Amino acid sequence: MAQLAEKGELIPEKSERYDGAIDLVTTREALRQERWILLAMESAWGRRGR
Image (cartoon, rainbow, N blue to C red; front, side, top):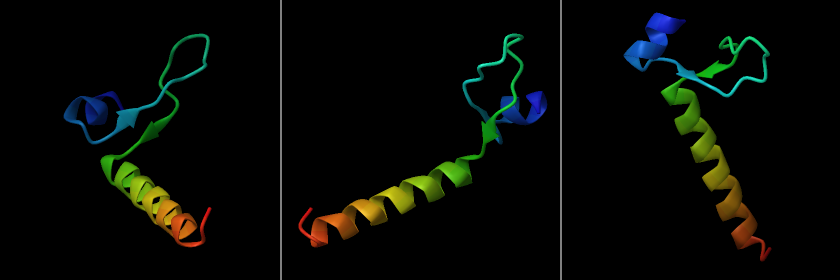
């Protein structure tokens, strides 16, 4: 995981572990998909007058 994070292929997330070990990761593609979903949801709500 450390090597993939160094290459930028995995993005470590904030961990609440006492030892500080990385146990949460995501990818750039997953972040892009999440942003797209949120934008789509926001635009749909705007069309409904919310």
